[in-house]
Image 1: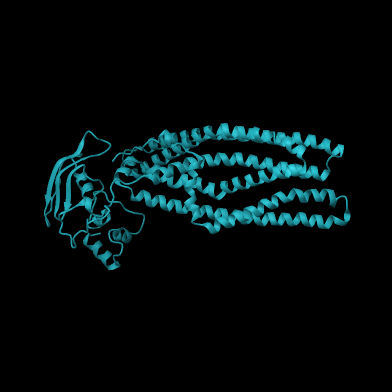
Image 2 (image 1 turned 180 degrees about the vertical axis):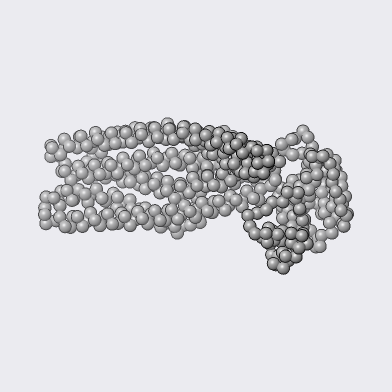
Length: 466
């Protein structure tokens, strides 16, 4: 088995379109999704209503004492609605994010564990774990936060622009100058952020893989007194990941700074012009206050969109890698109409002129013209130096791989015509270095037959002198 991963191809670059693959998982929870949209709509309406209430507070509340109680009561009512709707929006979208990512991780894990040995031979287990953990966390942030912020900000930007023109078309025209200037750095910075995000996630996966590999062989490390060496290697991998992330953060910070400067610079320019309009009597103080509020809401929403865009780029990189894994298909699979194995299985095993190459060594056959006949009740030992093909024979018998030529049969049935799971359930494998799962001794013994009773587990332990 090798421990090298397939490098991502240039055609696998992350695109925001890859996030569409999340929709089937979101659709499973339409109740939460609908509740979030309703809460989002109410919160957005309350946000856009606040400047109108603020204008009435300035123009009516301060100028006419008889209306002051009603005006401030209206402002407080808008605040309460905004608070309740925002809390509901946060609850629904956060719970939706948890459920979506849980479903995604379950499906990805089930898919990975069902892929054939060839896939796991060419992919590092640490990198696969990173896809399950680090990339899934990025997607949790997208569904549970970024998606909500993006939609809310888009609604408030559009609503603010509409209300700016309702309040003062002349000032609104000046405000529009800042929007294209704010969008340009987002567009130009997107490609750099995309590449930097992908590179950053790859370096984190490299560090995770190194840790998984070393901890899995910790006895070998300690037997050679290489703790310091491995600590240094992991520190170097983490340093590379941090250095790569620094470049991404630098670009993200620069884009955010430019956007905020341009947007709020335009707001200041509009305020200067609006102050002259108030002095000239073209608008009231309350209308200017309302306009400023809408401009601040719109400007803040554009700034939030800039930050969310960066988060979406990172998440698109993670979803791209997950989508690649979900598109993997096992080379060994059950036939359309599998043949049933005899019950009980006699155990007549035949290898006839079997040829097999591992993909990592195409020029060196692991087996070449191999023939073997094991009769029922026989005990056969395969002896030979390392690399002679002993483990390959057992892997082919368990149908972890299929031979390129020749046939393998049990009781006269070609293994390629049998259901792999049914075949493996009939074969007991005792490896030289057995794996112990993080569970009780009883559960480890029961792993071979999950429905075994406690008495059967104790009998097996006694028979193995365990």
